[in-house]
Amino acid sequence: MQTPLVPFLPPSASTLSDRVDALYLYLIGVTSFFTLLIVAALIFFMLKYRRRSPYEIPRPIAGSHRLETVWSVIPFIIAMSFFVWGAGLYFKQSSPPKNAIEVYVVGKQWMWKIQHTTGQREINELHVPVGRKIKLIMTSEDTIHDFFVPAFRVKADVLPGKYVTQWFEATKSGTYHLFCAEYCGMNHSGMIGSVVAMEPGEFNDWLSGNSSKVSPVAAGQQLFQSLGCVSCHGTAGEGGRGPTLAGVFGSQVFLADGKAVKADEAYIRESIVNPQAKLVAGFGPIMPTFQGQVSEEQLLQILAFIKSLQIANRETPVQSPTVAPSGRATASPAAQPR
Ligand code: CUA
Image (cartoon, rainbow, N blue to C red; front, side, top):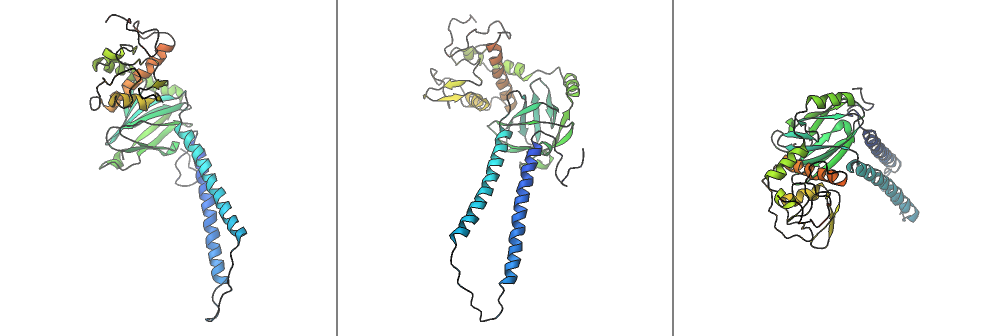
């Protein structure tokens, strides 16, 4: 790792890290300039207008609209520049690109559990290829943690009962610190690890050396069977007593109360742990909650399975011959005999 330009600054190793640093430098520049300006003016006026005789009476001062306008408008413009620049970067950072590789992250006291879509699991380590966009889908099993990789300028609170997404693209291979940046109990300071950014070739070697694991999609399909989801949603998510799941991810779902929601990760999760919260139009409140029956890691696996149904359904029904050809709202009762 080369030494950074500014001391104490972590290495800059992602596509966004230089942009975050530029914003930081701008903030430091502007605040330093005004600190110096104010202190200099303070000292200058202190000397220039010091009391020279004990009986001195100062000249009365009248207001100046022009001066007041100037010292309101200039700070306003400067403050808005912080806001516009910062918000732009924030949105860029928190909206993952479409073609990103997804990685599931579960924080718990006191470790980071990582699952790759290819089946590899890691604890306190995250291996990623350089030059590829990585989307993190993160949640917590217990309390609030914070996933912090200084070299990538990635930092986000990881909350229980919710999915938080972040993305990054490593630009240099190397091993970088991973911290928990939210006090989460006794061993918070030990909740550390590393992110290993590898050249794509090396990464493929790492992947193949760690294969043999079950992919989240396959694990999710297992759970889908064993938890009995299939009895209402069908073996391939074709629907039945419950809504169709094939193709649901990313689509608009119409609810019983007339509203529509986008079926994103958060919606799918809520529908599993709190099915009554958003009832799909045309279905009764018959689904039991799975709160407490499935771990966060298992929820992510079910999520991966439901997402996979989309791809299988859109193109060719490769997954199993029982995939219903139409994945639309009302499921055909004439599907298949069980
Ligand atoms: Cu987890 Cu601090």
